[in-house]
Image 1 (cartoon, rainbow, N blue to C red):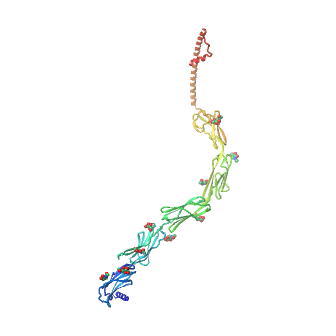
Image 2 (image 1 turned 180 degrees about the vertical axis):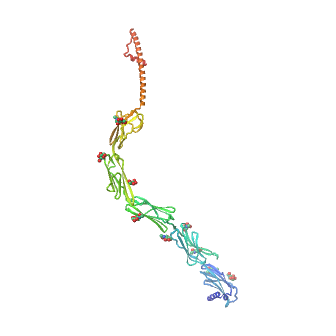
Image 3 (image 1 turned 60 degrees about the vertical axis):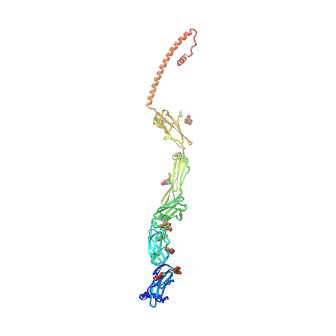
Length: 544
Ligand SMILES: *[C@@H]1O[C@H](CO)[C@@H](O)[C@H](O)[C@H]1NC(C)=O
Ligand SMILES: *[C@@H]1O[C@H](CO)[C@@H](O)[C@H](O)[C@H]1NC(C)=O
Ligand SMILES: *[C@@H]1O[C@H](CO)[C@@H](O)[C@H](O)[C@H]1NC(C)=O
Ligand SMILES: *[C@@H]1O[C@H](CO)[C@@H](O)[C@H](O)[C@H]1NC(C)=O
Ligand SMILES: *[C@@H]1O[C@H](CO)[C@@H](O)[C@H](O)[C@H]1NC(C)=O
Ligand SMILES: *[C@@H]1O[C@H](CO)[C@@H](O)[C@H](O)[C@H]1NC(C)=O
Ligand SMILES: *[C@@H]1O[C@H](CO)[C@@H](O)[C@H](O)[C@H]1NC(C)=O
Ligand SMILES: *[C@@H]1O[C@H](CO)[C@@H](O)[C@H](O)[C@H]1NC(C)=O
Ligand SMILES: *[C@@H]1O[C@H](CO)[C@@H](O)[C@H](O)[C@H]1NC(C)=O
Ligand SMILES: *[C@@H]1O[C@H](CO)[C@@H](O)[C@H](O)[C@H]1NC(C)=O
């Protein structure tokens, strides 16, 4: 039973004229079905009137006769797991056969659609190769693989071999940072009315970066003093995406904690660096910027130095005039000391100066400058100290002139300044009447100012005094006024004299008359005693 139809089929193909004389048909002639699915095949013939005719379906799949008629048989094929071509055959007596072929196509979705991992970081500007592995899937002539960037199709290729890896190379730019790449298969069974079946891989997100060709730049002094804080800055421009970059700052083996500020395509890391005396010497400052799978590194030499301030000492900061004061400045070995006003010294790190304190030294600032050469740079540290010299009150001809001669009425300023530390109190008084001299004000000179004054400057350190002679010159204009005044006085006095003598003559006459009257009364015994001072009495009368 099995060998016959195969033989018939062979004959059918090799000798179609002999074997194909009977008309057999199969329905459907071709079909596409899901793998493992079932299908009903109707085998039928037109003409065969022999009782021993035989109609059947030759297939490896399990089949069940579902229904039949006189010239047809309906079979249910199930478990169809691969493409095959079952054959309907008819045997109508010896030598009369016929066959009809059914073409069954099995479709199956890919088992695996996978985009191979992207590099963790892809340098921008370099081409990226995408690979998509497709395992399974049939029929292959309807299966296509599509590579996608986000929703955009990059490449569309047929899936042929098993398994198949489809590849595409795409240029990568900055805009691809964060793009989602994926791969999908399309099983197109629309012609069969079954539709379009998509299978999608997991997406893979791309990270791309740009690092400039220039290394990070430092903004840091080349020398650092132990015990001080210094900002250390390292910056880099032209990197993308700046926010994803990391900065590593280290001095020698010591990692510095930096604060990173990000710009659009730049970053700047700043650390506050304190170096200790143990780190004295040359140190390597390293700045590394890590982005993607690469890093850019810069380093620079830093010289750490110790430079204590010079010790500037005065044997006394307050001295009396004539005291000896020792000024000494000392620095640590290796430094060069310069003490202002001091002569050349045998040792470079020490300088001293012996001073006989004078009034001119009061307020003098002694400055000591120490120079240290560090890595080709000369560094300075300076200290200053002020000397106070106490000296007694002093009145000099230059500051308190002893002889002023001024014309009367002119505007003058009396100048007298006493020197001393502490500042003395100055008072000038005229000899004789103790009038004080108005010092320091611009005022018109009056004649009364003239005289010899004694100026005394007093402080707790002693006193000094000095005579100041003020001479006022009178102007001729004043003499005229005096002459006029004198003339007026003369006239007034002569008028007064004239009137006096006139009055006196009148009184004498009156007296004589009175006397004559009294004498007449006395003769009658009624006379009063005569006044003791007849002139006074008469004048009293006159006044009334
Ligand atoms: C099978 O095919 C024959 C001939 O075309 C037809 O007459 C018959 O109805 C079919 N049977 C079924 C169940 O469709
Ligand atoms: C054909 O056989 C399979 C398996 O026995 C069954 O699931 C299916 O329903 C059958 N088809 C028809 C049309 O009877
Ligand atoms: C960084 O990754 C790219 C792409 O994956 C690779 O070509 C390059 O060699 C890598 N560079 C380093 C330093 O690992
Ligand atoms: C890629 O996918 C992630 C999450 O899966 C999403 O946040 C991101 O926006 C996507 N990128 C683009 C360019 O669509
Ligand atoms: C492929 O896609 C179909 C629908 O399109 C789905 O039923 C099937 O499970 C998918 N296969 C895989 C392996 O994801
Ligand atoms: C850094 O210092 C080392 C030794 O301390 C020296 O050899 C090197 O030349 C220096 N480099 C620069 C760039 O100054
Ligand atoms: C300081 O100088 C004054 C005058 O110049 C002098 O009289 C005095 O003796 C000096 N003092 C000393 C200690 O040399
Ligand atoms: C210290 O003194 C040196 C030399 O006298 C001078 O060049 C420098 O400017 C001074 N520095 C300061 C901070 O005063
Ligand atoms: C004061 O100065 C005048 C001239 O300016 C001079 O004639 C007079 O002798 C001086 N007197 C004294 C005490 O120096
Ligand atoms: C002059 O006057 C001052 C105060 O104005 C006084 O202290 C001083 O004793 C007086 N001198 C004389 C000699 O009267």
